[in-house]
Amino acid sequence: MRWLTLLLVALILALQYPLWLGKGSWLRVWEVDRELAGQKEVTLKLKTRNASLDADVRDLKQGYEAIEERARSELGMVKRDEIFFQVLEGSNQSSRLEEKKETR
Image (cartoon, rainbow, N blue to C red; front, side):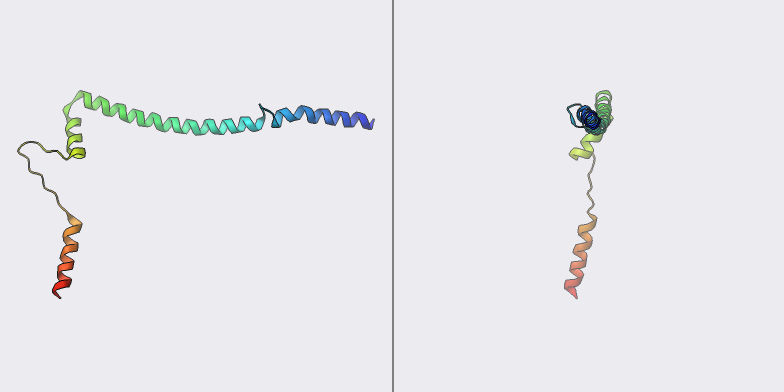
């Protein structure tokens, strides 16, 4: 009777091994599931970026306002007969403080 019990326990363990540690085991399924969740996050971010780029392309194809906006902001371009003023806030104040210190 004791040999039969040991044989059955060994058979159960032999059947459980592929389920828990084999090629298609639960551990592998959990690992693949985690990888899938991470890939879904990456895909969602890329879809959002693609939608934004698609909207930009449509704006650039339809009108000149988007082109003008990009030219002004990214390239620093101005229209004819416009005057461009650049205000530097930080550098004027620091130079004035240095001048005051030197005159004292």
